[in-house]
Length: 248
Image 1 (cartoon, one colour):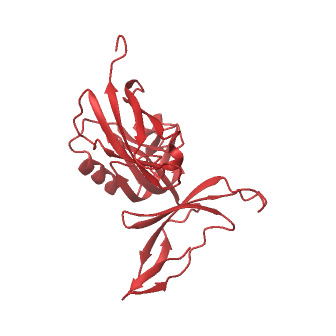
Image 2: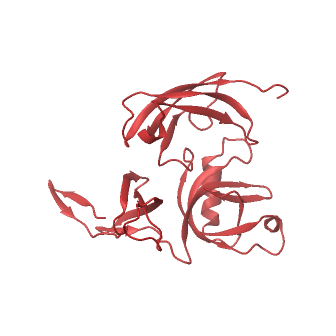
Image 3: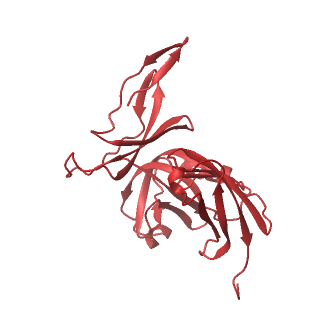
């Protein structure tokens, strides 16, 4: 992959970053000053005639006139997106597509920045809200004692790549623009945003609002506001009706 720079009305190509052989590109976005490339590839042991089905992401920066991959995956750094929670006796990271909480090790080089960013972004929230972050780091052994020893695994964060209060594990497919984080809501919640056309079924998709325990507090449907038979972004609106389960 390469990019073209607008230099006085003329476009000049940059260096190329290798994504893969006969991959299936999905989308390219510029977000938070970096270029995010979504594509599908095949496993290393699969033949080239196999349809690429494995979803992959590369994040690139533009520095000194050149494209550069941000923390290419290696034995020392893996890019992980997920939820960070900081508080008394809590310092956890729950990566997307995983079920076990990771203890953020105290010797993580990025821990001071992670904690400062967390406190700044969520200063108006109740205690222990999760914040979506992208971290570069590696799984590591648990500490021998302390609060971290109660976790199943640990994570050493080498760099905080991105923190997004509105981010989530499906942000490449759907973006919720309202209600905003920390916004007070009433019994009827208007929801708006955008989603990839593939997210819709017959122009709609269900909406659910749950609490931290997984209890459903509200439900409804979102409806596409423009033609949805596409892989591009399609705006949606919907309404959630709050309710309490019997005995809740």
